[in-house]
Image (cartoon, rainbow, N blue to C red; front, side):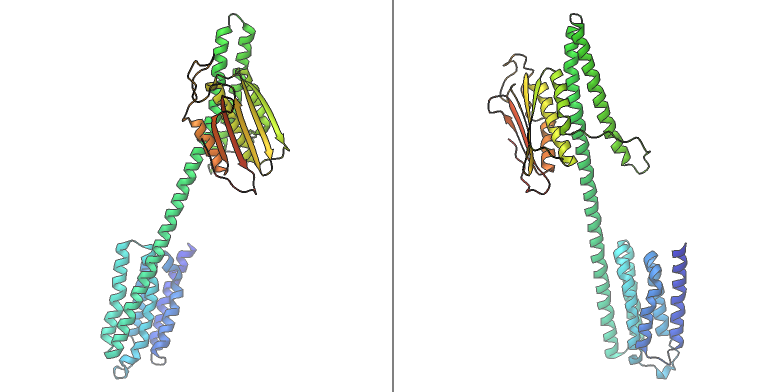
Length: 398
C-alpha cells in the first residue's frame, strides 16, 4: 500500500515539475530545463520499478509538453533555443532500458518504437538544419545504447536464473542419491541378516528350539535397529519442510564407534568378524565417520550375502592426514564359481548398487577406493579418506 501511494505521489510530482518548467521557459535556457526534466525522473523511481511502461508514458508526455508548450513568443523561438531541451528525452531512454530488461519482447519492441518516434517527430518539427541532424543522431544513439543495455541486463538475469535452476537440480539429485545410499546401506545389510537368521531358525525350530529362539531374537534386534534408522532418515527429511511439526530429538547417526555392534550382528549371521584399530584414534568429522561406517556395513553385507566366508577382518587405521578402512574376507573371490567352496551362496556381484554407493561416498570426500581380489584369496575392500586440511587424492577403483 505504501509503495503504491509513493508511486502515485511521484507521478503527480513529475507532472507538476514539468508544468513548472514550462512556466519558467521565458526565464531559463533550454539546457537548464532539460537538466530539470532529467532530475525529475527520480520522482518516478517507484513507478519505474512497478510499472515501467506507465513511467515511460509519463516521461515522454512530460518532455514533449515541456518542449511544445514553450510560452515564448513565436518570433523569439529558434532551433538553437530548442536544441538543449531535447536532452530531456534521455530520461525516456533510461526507462526504456528497464522495459527491455524486464518486460516481454513485444512490449519492449513497442516501447522502443515509441521512444524513438516521439523525439524524432519533435526534432523534425522544432529543429532545422544542423540542429536537427544533431538531435536525430543523439536520439538514435541513445535508443541503441538503452536497448543494448537492457538486453545485456536481461541476458545476465536469464543466465543467473538458469544457473540457479541448475544448482537446484544438482542439489535435488545429490540429495536423492544420498537418501538412496543411506536406505540401501541400512536396509540391505539388515534384510540380509534377517533372511539368513530366518532361514537358520526355520531349519532348527523343531530340533533345536534354543537356536531358533536366538535367531528370532537376532531378527527382532536387527528389525528394531533398521526401524530406528528409517525413522531417523524420515524425520530428517520432514524437518526440511517449512511447516514440519516439531518432533523428539533424532537418535545419533552411526559411526565407527558402532563397528563392534555391527560385527556382532554379522557374527550372528554366521560370519566371524575381527575388528582391528590402528593408530591414534581421534574425533572425526560427522560425514567422514558416517561414510566410513557405511562402507564397512556394505562390505560386510556383501560378505554375508555373496562370499560364503566364515571369517572376515575389518581394519580401521587412524593415519596422519587420513582415515583408512579395510575389509578382507576368506570367501569367494570375483572369479570363483558358485559351489566352488562349501556353503558358498554365489559369485561376487560385479555391478551392484553397494559398490556404486561406496564409490560415490568416497568420491564426495575426495578419497580413493579399491575393491577386488584379496592378496590371499577372497575379496578386499579398501578405502582411504583424507581428513580436513590435507591434500585431496583422486578416486581409484579396480
